[in-house]
Image 1: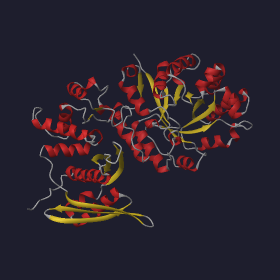
Image 2: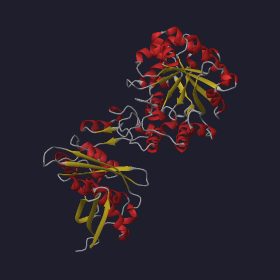
Image 3: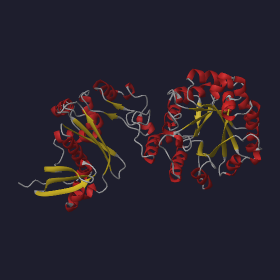
Image 4: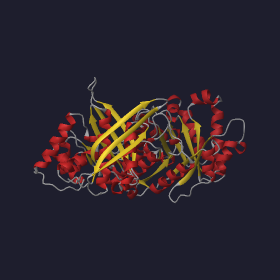
Length: 534
């Protein structure tokens, strides 16, 4: 049985730029466009040339793609002028792109309220815009804004808007759920009706996520006959975001309902780059990745309950709907007070530690974790600290930073001044470190790393170390409150790790987490041990 072709239209560079707190530079756009093209999406919408300086320059120096069609975005011509004399259309026509995607109203309510024109005039604007671009040999796509709301209110008019573009040669007419309020069963019903008038091979879906249904609506539209899906990487977009291509693309490949019926131009082996692509985008935006994102999130294949881990060890299909490697992700076994021996064994296996499942040290680690969690620790978010603890209990962790004492002082004069002093015993010698910073952790970090220049043995390992995040949680109230500190660190490897510290004193909790971070760096770099001379 022959399969229908599905096309992926990525709008990250335009819709994604409408996300609160997101501003793409030209360099950002080029980097993102390159990785999208490497994945093999069919269309990359670069933005709106003529609407702002960045988009205009981006199209003036348009990137070259091997696998994707570069697309410019704009709107239908304005009333009262011809398509040939509309400045907005001229910017699109002159843009260095193979295709043009133009948005126009398809809800009669919006035609009246937003545009302030007659319904017939809006139809003429759509028709003349389509004719203009098709005549000038541009692949033309029409985004029917608010189509589903328009169809519910006035089905005939909404479809007439589509036909103005389709009848003039539009390659695609795209049904937009612009305010994200349509539900999957409504999408299925409406798309099915539209395909009786316009062929499904010319119909696309553009869904927003305001009811958390953008992915479901996109997939429902495909099953009802649409053959193009528009969306963004990581679901970026205005308000609650757009349809998430990081979820849609693997679903189309890996779920029987779709892979038996449809083909994509994206190569299946490119699926393994999706997780990297998702996190690369977050890195560009200086944004913390969403751990709970389907397929590509750090928690997408994480297992915490002991019974779950035991089952996954026997057969991953019990709690994993796909092999994480297919999308470039990996299984994560979490250690916590919910853990069993299976969790410990699985984590040790991940660290390359071979140990008999009946070895009493396994139970020793499990008991230690549960005891520490009772006092406030939480290792399900602090992998590095757990790895250090486990190796210490197994006798495999060298001693690195032996702390004799430390002092932190905060003084308020004209401004707040924070200084720190730490004394280490390294190879039998006292090393005193001091530094200042904009807070206790920063001062301690500066004290340790700046003064270790005198100890080449360890300083070189810290030269690329970066502290990315610092979080404090108060676990109980009152004067004896317990404080938990979580520190995220990274280095030039591009990978980050989390360490934890717990104490009734916030400085002590912070210091513990910081020392764990430094020792983990030394441990993973296989630094030489501290020689204790007696």
